[in-house]
Image (cartoon, rainbow, N blue to C red; front, side, top):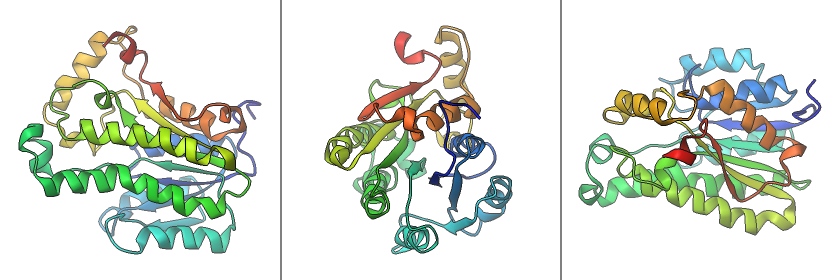
Length: 257
């Protein structure tokens, strides 16, 4: 067992696994390898067949549906964790969504409804999760969410998700300040672009991958496995002195972009 990344005896919730190639999957594997017991969610019945094999490989005892736009589903996840475990040590929020027509439009053409939905799913849901986690983190804990460099610089075709991710990173800072007295640390993990199902909705995403690979110092695109190592560190006791930060897991792209 790695003495730094030791999650033995800890219990965590992972929200955002869509299939074996998800960023959340890479994180969950490292949580599990470090000794954590995991609860995982899937979006809906269509997603369940892709998530179940991942959950089985993780030996997850709790596997539940969770669409944050459906009343009561997120609350049901935390109620189940409270009933079965009585506590939660860490949480990973790795979900984002914008309607295709708004994601593909320039920001000035984004609809109010589309902007509101993107903000609800991609940002406010993390705040909701933090509130629901509080009663289960009486001994402290770690809250993590996934962001991207488009939160702080304009990235072509990222459009509405840029300001939404900026709001998410700001929320991390405010939550970190709000929850510091409860020994709960809060992190945004800003990853490099990863070819996931969610990312496929961004126009010209392959061109973005090529551009980032060319401009990254080692000409290397990060993998879900590499991102997972960072997440496992932040979930561990070794990560407790870090809070309120955007932690870059992007092979240095942010330093030269």
